[in-house]
Image (cartoon, rainbow, N blue to C red):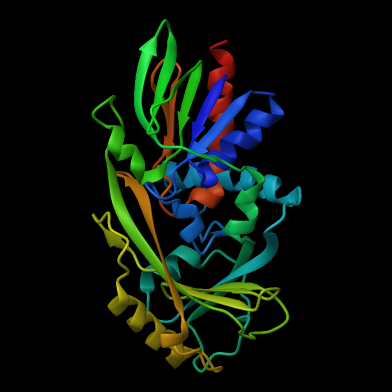
Length: 318
């Protein structure tokens, strides 16, 4: 019997593969105590210029993308196939990173001609709808202990249950448990974005990067997202509004169409976790205990690969 803790995309990746292998899983999370970052994400799965042969992390991301692409292609509610477009104006680093991709035109008219405009496959996800496929019971884990080669899990309400395996897919909140067992060094990186409803940017959804700012448009809901910021070494959920304002102003200068007013936007903030080398991980610090984390900006690409690897490790222990 397996307990899965967390209700974001990392937990979804494990539960998807666990169901295929007929694992019996309990699933819990505590959004009021440990908010789910995946629900506060612009939620686009794309390689964003990553290619094989450049770095070990890049190789892993490409392998992860192949698995994610196969998964999303099966058809899931809250998921839409799209093209991600990157338009480079002043960032020379991005000129090098994206130069191997096919040239294209931006999905919306721009006032300026970019130095480079390229396209790649992508999936646009609506997290609230998508993650409903894996409902979690609201419960807070407050203690773990080994009992006759099994794991006794204590919950905030005073109850405790015993499991053969415990999978912690809790993002940055893994750091709360570092006193119990060794975990990779994690840093908190806050990401915030703006969301408008009742907008009209065309008949097709799109994902567009203008230098380092992302625009994501969901045509079915007429929803536009703009973000996101990246603020390191924080654990609070207060958005960096000055950064968002600068991004809104920059995009306003580039788009031919008018952006909605910033005062009319809803602000979302999520706390990502990142390792020292930015590499996501799955590993078992002790028999029967499994951690999935460090996903940073790559959760929607890497969770299916990490979930499969974790399930395979559990099955190998049987």
